[in-house]
Image (tube, rainbow, N blue to C red; front, side):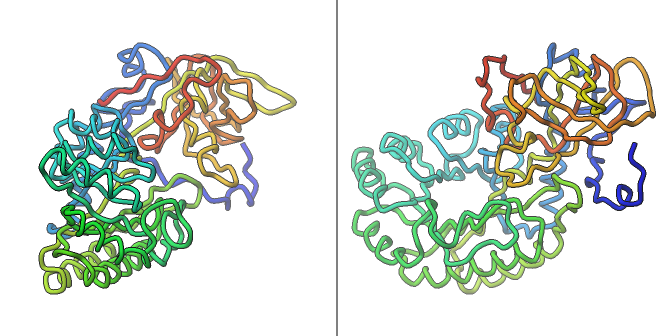
Length: 417
């Protein structure tokens, strides 16, 4: 193992302390990993810990004002069992397709607390949303006519909010989804005319949706974006055909993936939201404030588990070849938004033995591409064929965000434990 001063000073991953241990075994959902793997029946698989999901929601409830509604953005993890579990913990569910809408409603989500966002909604999807009675976050003037037609067909006005593309960005975000030219939402300068048009068409206006960015670990940036979003909604409310009842301030809460990153401090965000709740009582008295979170709710509660099927040494470098890779976990391979590839937190769980030895090794998948890389020259427990490799922070944007049909390998399993 490299023990030079430079190596010792290098940034390390935040501790993955959310999972317990039993002897040398990682414990997920109350079960040692080797036993869980036997229960699943095959590798690779994703496992999501329902106790950690419950704890994360409780942590947020304790930090945020009770008046703020908490919505689950199910794009982060649309596994039906996860959605069903989360629907019982949060106040609402946000969907981004008719397929997600079906999963949410089948899982028991209250249609009154389901919102449907996303650019390029098809007319058939808009019709489904109106029939289901969910809130549609309008992202284009084109959506108004099919919404009006569906309203007339069903004899009930479509419930709508306008997703606004603001004139500011969420600073320090992994992905910026507002400010400047964007495919998301309606540019703020076009909102007054669109509000007038939806009133003319008889649609039921409920409020605004602002989502400036995601994966932010800086509380001050999130607070600034929330303040700006509230001020913008207050300004736009002057043009609204009815009182604002719904104000989705977005999310953006990040989790630590890479060396040197620290967990988000919720305390200043809670204090900031308490101030906005107080302002809303006087300035937007009919309004419910909503926070929409996906990754932050589920990301740290999941692991991706794959088995080492070969161990190779090539010109002095150790390669641990596993039975799953980027086809199941595109994000961990660095091919889902990373500009410069960085390692997710990864470990090796030895099977049938205990060892304190550590080696520098790369974890690679079975695909015929050098992009299939889960860990690049990391310090890992010394591994043998048959051991399990575990990728932490894998509860969000994993199986559903990966090209599982690539090269014809079998899809991975998913379990909620």
